[in-house]
Length: 104
Image 1: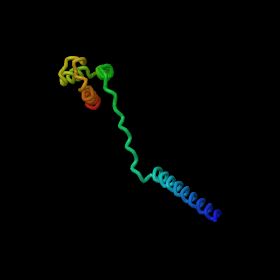
Image 2 (image 1 turned 60 degrees about the vertical axis):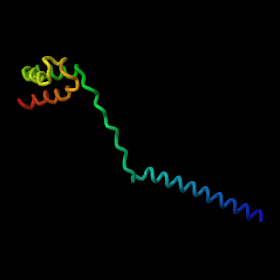
Image 3 (image 1 turned 90 degrees about the vertical axis):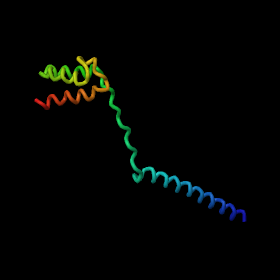
Image 4 (image 1 turned 45 degrees about the vertical axis):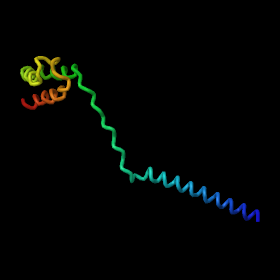
């Protein structure tokens, strides 16, 4: 009877091992099946615009013959010169400056 009980114990151990392998296979299949919604990529945060970067763009526009329009844009944002423009308005100022090329 000891051989039979040893055999029964071995069979029980094999069943436990099979259950663990089955659980691992199910977990892997779930992780790599593609059924899950893909993770949304982290939005790339734009670096803040610097005074120097804005100055470079406006200088190019001025050299292209838009000096008067650049002065008008600065006044639109409440300044006589670029250093007087609130940095929060740099993006909008550049967008307006880009429109100068489209207007001519």
